[in-house]
Length: 284
Length: 160
Image 1 (cartoon, chains in turn green, yellow):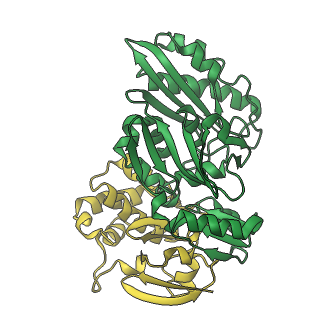
Image 2 (image 1 turned 30 degrees about the vertical axis):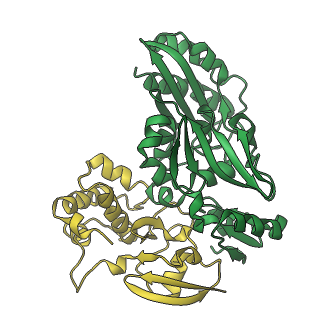
Image 3 (image 1 turned 45 degrees about the vertical axis):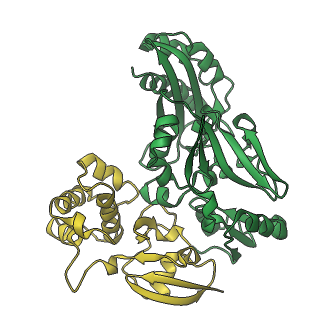
């Protein structure tokens, strides 16, 4: 399978990429690592006239420590995030989730920013980004703006990144010392999540002091299970106490029905996986 | 058409390609390097795995223009002076193939696994090969071959 013809631009700076985007208008598609886009182009599900490849923009790569935040450039590959002690230490649930993304070859090319903007609800980085209260730095002709995680995911394959704009970095508030776990349910290796749960918790003296839960593939966007987060606070990190709190994990969700399972099955999975994830994150 | 400069298996090439040309098609059809095969065309099976700047990628999921200025190693670039790469020898010794179609990608990915971790456990080998499918289901001997290569100094020769 071969993509339809397109013109190809590979700018080397964000400024050049924004100019190219402004000039191309509607007919351009921005490419990150290309690991989701290229299959789409090969299957001719999309046939843009122009591809703007961000792969040669060095300023978009890298991970840095900015005081109480870890900042990840949008074009940083999954593999580079996995190798980062900074991320593992302060945003462990993102590391956990990326371990489960596709396979090593895809992780060598695929980028965190690309996956977030692609916004596939079955993708693995949205839920941890949401759970960690990530801030999204979006750059347009007028400069940078920052969007909160709760406002970033708009709908299926749709984010707050507007026409003529690029996601340039994400800023993750440090969750130092929090336990974490990403529980992904699939039938075969390197499949998209049927359902997955990102949990990160802070335990004090055997009691859950704070909890953040993100759900993958339980609706058209990644979701926060805020009712569970609230119900967990002050509970002992034991099976019974956590099980009761996690019973509400699927409340307010609207998961898809497909060949892998219907919506009710996914709701059941969400409660089970949330309990497992929280217990593991709490060290139970 | 876009002009690219790529080093493949140690040899520099300068070519004009259509931007939509996949790296695997460039390797097979422009350079004649048919050792790299196309299995699934959906980036699932890993048969087309090559190394791009020393790290494994699925060459059906990379554009040839993205390889401009970079270095590609294929299964055809592993043997040195007629001597098989230790991973190739291990696959041969362990009979780590049935039909052989997945073998080029398996070997390229197996080398990447050892580059990342020269002394992997059996589970780490299986996880490291999760992006490569063997439709004959001959995984057992493939894992044994990687274990043999890990124990026979493949790490020294694994850089590509």
